[in-house]
Image (cartoon, rainbow, N blue to C red; front, side):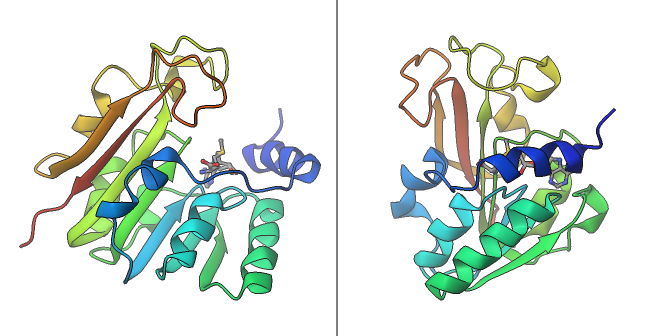
Length: 192
Ligand SMILES: C[S@@+](CC[C@H](N)C(=O)[O-])C[C@H]1O[C@@H](n2cnc3c(N)ncnc32)[C@H](O)[C@@H]1O
């Protein structure tokens, strides 16, 4: 069977255009920091990284795909954006403590990560999650339940945080809508 990086490298070899940033960022841009350091986990071609860097953040962009990361590095370079790219297999143990003002993870669900993501967020920083839901009424996105959010599961990823925004687009079947079949949450880690 294909290794996960081989699968994604093949996909990105055929498709190299970063699309729109995730709705969790574009819909909530008025409440997100514009200074500091952000981490885009499982960034793919980096639409979220490009969006955040263009707003003034220093961005760290991590993904397992060498093809996606080299594509993003080229885009960042050509646009003069401050994005530090890194190829790696993301696990809880690679996340540093208290290091980021914003962490975004979109369209990637690994349930072992949320506690480490919260630890990696600075106090007062924000965590942004968005992905597909088990209740989605649209055929795009994964079908394996392992990669689909249960109802209100996002809230369980951010215990003790202030919820700044939450939206469930499970019933949205407009495939042009960036939230169709997905849910997002933006949560602020309390100031210590
Ligand atoms: C559906 S794409 C999402 C990309 C981007 N976040 C977005 O919303 O457009 C999932 C990404 O997860 C990456 N990925 C899968 N497993 C990974 C792992 N173990 N470590 C790091 N990245 C991984 C893939 O290479 C791919 O870029």
